[in-house]
Image 1: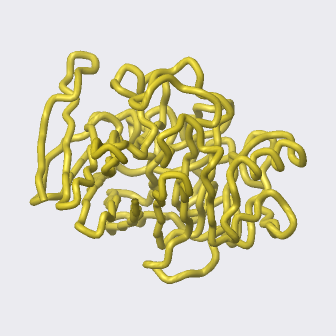
Image 2: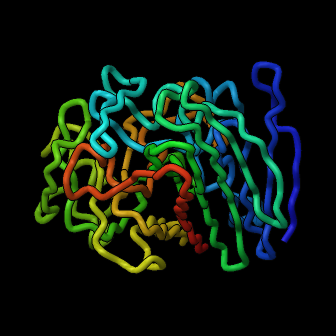
Length: 338
């Protein structure tokens, strides 16, 4: 296993560092300190040159314009209705950044931070102390994010946090994938271990209702082609995917989803002990330059393993409370085959 640290670029006069791990099979992972962003997940291509299966942007300035691309998300992934929730009966209101809604941790979430980066052996480690006064969530919080890669070609993202007051903690990585050599995901297929999805309001916050996927475009239990799925969604629902799937009960090491590309033979299986997966297929990324080239229609699919969003506002969604003085840890594993 080889490691490398280098200067990525600068943002507001501050160095943004890039950390890279390469395993014995020439699979590599790179992450940068701005937003704890996964910049590259490279596998050997058909010509021996590395192919990045992530759709990421080439600079911190571009990340400022195109938030969330492969960035760490927290304190809470997804949307909080009216930025309001209760912990132990006490109501809190946090800053909103999408109308009245708090999206992905709000305007000062994990993705906006410049993290302290280092190697711990062959693991990339990012740490950050965030005051409550900075992001408006209760509790001053210490967060550690690690990215590790093994010789089974598994990338593991681990998120740990400890707060001095009761708060919420539901992190994820906003990974955008394209496994092919093409600039479209149309030929790729997706399998999700989910019998239900969340019904959403017009502002994309959950209504609280879980709906069966049977006989709908939300049924990915049997490896659905993405173009077929998107076309069916547009015909029946009126838009492409920006949906929350309710993951079935499963073992921690059992994949919750698998993205595959028949043309290249590549696949990535996602394992997580969480109860949700967000799937987002942006219609058109034209106008932005990405590491793999100019953006275009259906260039990427975002797959975000997390707990169900807006958790404290709905019974049966689980618990994402981080009690004062306790540490919580979540992991997401991405196993690539090629």
